[in-house]
Length: 94
Picture (cartoon, rainbow, N blue to C red):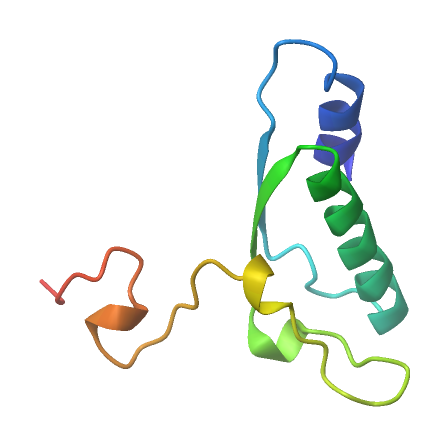
């Protein structure tokens, strides 16, 4: 991912350390998805903040056949269609 490489190169400089990945895991092989998640975690560990949007069905299966799940501390917001609590800003439909 070009944006990750650029963020890592610019890390020592006074530059943004925030990336937004929309649908990053779509269309990848499960092994590639798991590798990408490891890379995202590595980059988070060096100070690059990231937002990743993902649909449940795009989450990979682990080698033992279980659906991958992010750690609780990695998930800031879960969006859903069951009322305002699942909307980005907790707003009613207008």
